[in-house]
Image (cartoon, rainbow, N blue to C red; front, top):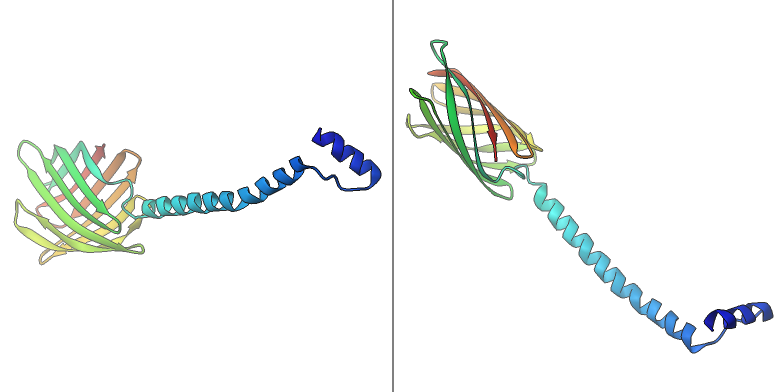
Amino acid sequence: MGHQLAYRAAADGKHPVSKLSSTSEFLAKARRPAFAAVAFFMAALATTAGHAQSSPFAGMAGSWSGGGTVTLDDGSSERIRCRATYQVSGPTMKMSLTCASDAYKFNLQAAVKAEGSAITGEWSETSRNVSGDLQGRGGGGNFQVLASAPGFNANIAMHTSGNKQSVSIRADSQFRGANIALSK
């Protein structure tokens, strides 16, 4: 019926007048603010979720396990089993990494903070009672940091992608390094 009125009015050069078209126009106008409010709300949620995911440590939270090798100062190499736990809160993260073989063990703890791509924090290796500072850069699952203490320096590279993570440590002390592969 509405189409017939519109057709006749168009043929006569007039605008159709009907309760149906007035009601439809009113509903269309009423829906616009509601649609705009819903669109704004959804955009705000997407921005909030995206912002939460933009943390440089996003995707790392939780418990990880795996294994790798440790190379000792004498050049010998041993297989190790590892567990890691990451507690992420926005731009900060607390980390615990424990690795052990039959003859060797290390327990690395760290608390770090990101400001942009700069990473700073403190670390400790509890089985040897050594602690120091961490400095480096990172984001998007890739981190390069230097762990330093009096008489000790170690370069640590971490790469996280999905539920896989690799950790590479190169040191100038009792052990030369470690290569570790972890998964959630």
